[in-house]
Image (cartoon, rainbow, N blue to C red; front, top):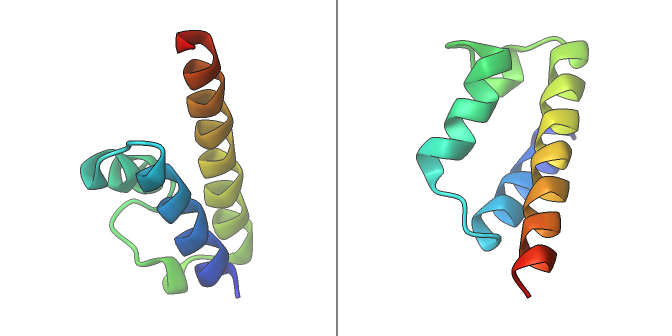
Length: 66
């Protein structure tokens, strides 16, 4: 379940213009070298929260550019 949510958040970041390496760096900052399905629920929640923060930041930047 959390894996699907994380995938959806990653897709949103891609849509907002993020490159794959940038998304991987965000996740690796919490997960290290582990795969998402190997992480504790707490770490999966941290990743989701961090991705949401990044999405919100990207959206704010897009509003400023307009």
